[in-house]
Length: 222
Image 1 (cartoon, rainbow, N blue to C red):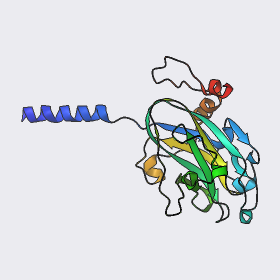
Image 2: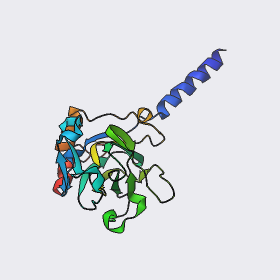
Image 3: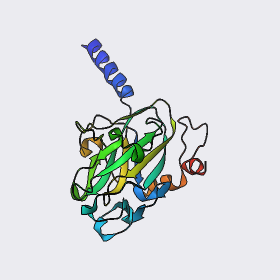
């Protein structure tokens, strides 16, 4: 009996060591390192309840459709190699205002999705006239599989959210290594905190061993 308890304790201890904590990064859309017009940060009343009071979009009426120009770019330091998923807090009024283009390098190729219209990078945003969470997918002609990005090593990454249709609204982004989660609760999604916003603006070390102090601000200057 004593031997069995010792074995059980050892198994629990080993399992505890192998359960790594999920990587989680919360970003404010309006604090992107660069926003290219006609995409813009806005505090319009139609986005009431946005985190930090602002969101990004290409301003327009939901019925207009169109779009195809403008983007927001985020420099995201990844501290651990592996697979990642992205959730967005969004408003999509109707079928004419429910999509973005999304590329994340270096996992994705250096491709202008607005020009190539590659459906692999097309995000079909879940409809809803109030802020809600939606996991970024690949809106293919034959389905909408949820996207995963794999990074072979830690370091600088560049996430671009590009306009596809007028009036699609993005408030925040939540990046997680929990790629298995199928709903926001399971993914532990959350809004950016004051600390998250400070990190996004001022910078954070990239190197997992903290040997080199590479910051978001430094990357932005590059």
